[in-house]
Image (cartoon, rainbow, N blue to C red):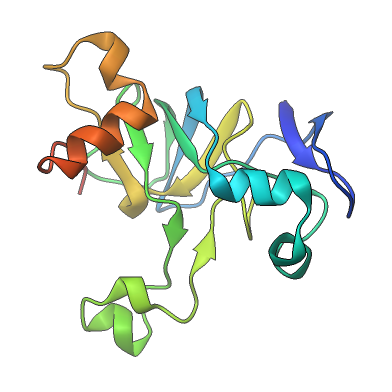
Length: 164
């Protein structure tokens, strides 16, 4: 599949062929429909000091996205193939003291989509189902599939629904 990849430790980003992601029993495979660029992506593109210390190369980047589920892991519940989704880019372990106490934002084992693991500037993305959120169907199509719209609506009240 095609992906935008930080191919080498220098400024820039490259379109490359990379393997399609595999899913585990608790994962969903998302066919990416739209993406957005954020500040993290600019740090990676410019290859600044933070990116040099953080990003392994090569790495497919990007973590602002939405799309449709095309495959479900065997243990996934609450989602169906075809669901429109976006996802939380901070993948936490679920087992450390903070995760078990409901403080996943403080997980010491957090892995970032498009930062520490392959990202969404690609045709497909695999993430844990726990990190996926359904886009509401009651909003016009142009809003449902645009990550910025999802963020703006979420800022004014929760409008994303967790699948599980």
